[in-house]
Image (cartoon, rainbow over the protein chains, first blue to last red):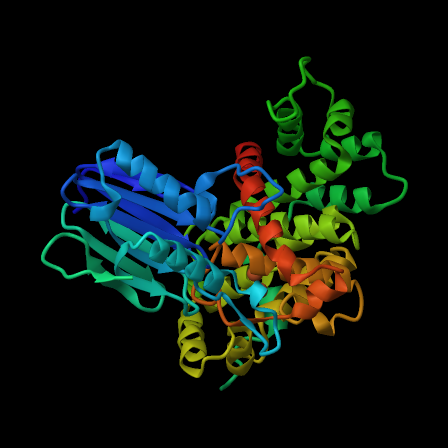
Length: 176
Length: 287
Ligand SMILES: [Fe+2]
Ligand SMILES: [Fe+2]
């Protein structure tokens, strides 16, 4: 059963909520779905990141599109609802390599790996607590977060639905 | 394994075959010809009532932002440009069957459509950056590159699940699995379809070689654009069904187009920027 607001986190979207909500990040290929939760404030946030870094010579049309602009923007939105970054726990999924590359291919081509790397680097820089991650591989993923239970689920075509983690208390989170 | 259904059988079972309306095909051919004019294109459109209405709706849509109302078809063609008219005709003509779920490929409703339209939009951006071929032709080739999947799905729905499992177990690309199990792949089926519709050679080539662009002897630039567009829209999660993965990416496509791997992010950025608006516009008119 789903409870509360249904939030579809589309390409480059940032969605935040206080109280009951279900977040869905549909069809993550090389993109990253990142969810953050401050249990004390009961505030959730999710961002659908598409590229590692904003371009220096081009204005940013949607902050959620890039890891380096999307993550701070999501956290700022959550702070407006009373969240505190130091209490946040996070989980991420996505960053798949959807095509195969030859051994001599440029690593620039693998958008998925670079997205995951950029996201983790930013989170490490903030000393964020990462509860779980499911990145890489070659499968497209759908990420679903239910705020009432705190359970983060990842669905793939072949693997079906599996629980990635639970961001509510009682589960230990590991520092990044 | 035995090849129970041949490509010829698939393509000849015309009753269930996806088709493109005659008027859309005629518009496409006309716009390719050197003698095409707004008037000659309008004369074709007028034979198809639904298409006429769509062309007028698009010309009068907020997207083109004209203050006066356009009620004359040739004028609408002038406003939109022949290329947009052609794209609209093709999108409207393919949307009804492309939007259907392709269960065999684990694609839900609209997913094949989003993959096709996404590839068309991304490939068009690649063509613009490379300046190696007609953006417009590339759009069409991108839209139709996976039509073989639609045809295969219609007849081999029950078999597709097994092919998918086989590909996963053997860790081979899906087109390889198609060839091993059926004796042919969706590229060859698409090529047969495109040829039977008398589509321009560039589009037939894109259907056949979009996963193996190095093998394309002719019209390689168009094939290369579609190959890169296919990767970008797949990376952004468009139409990643059971087979979305494991296709080899040929970096040679970028090199041949005069593009560098570093430009992948910029192409992707522009794709994400344009896609939603573009899709909404076409869908509103085509649906
Ligand atoms: Fe394909
Ligand atoms: Fe494709």
